[in-house]
Image (cartoon, rainbow, N blue to C red):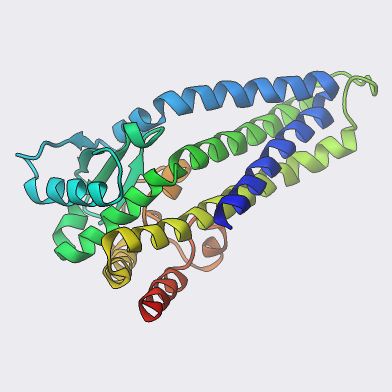
Length: 281
């Protein structure tokens, strides 16, 4: 069901991109929108992992340098029937983790130094299993494509804004409806963000479920999520909002209305679902 939901949301994002391109620039605008999406997705598919790892100063570690962490990743990857991913550590006080890589053969699991200080071995196994589930489900590719299409929509909206400020074509046959363009300039980026958030939230639930099965005990991940959520509210991380959806818990602090625009589901709901898995066993 999550796979079908994600596919529907991805198609919705793509259609939104093409529609906005058509409203702004007619047929040529639609073509330009598709070219933007293709170019951005090509770059992010091949280089997104390197970009985000460098962004957070993540360093690769060997088994000799981090034997316990490396051993956990290797054992759980074998259980998940995945190739051994590369292991990275980030010098960050906030306890957090993410996975990246364009496919399971190029998977990467990155954890902060903070997460290794506050979690028990069992809880850390739950977190690693969650990230391996992301790799197994190819969520990184899905979220990357979603983010780049959403970014392209915002870019087109900005182009339309500048075009209206400095003037542009008024050829109704080739260009778009100016009223519709104004509406899409405002609504398009917001709608794209909401669809992107829906994709991210759906994928988090799927990774929680898959990670609990890989680790063998849903309560290990549930306990880890509670600790990570509390710590993320107290310990700041200088995280880029464009990459916040990649982390197991939102690295950006904030409450109130900001929670409505979070890329992550509520921790309480994630924990409740994991606890329900325990009762069904």
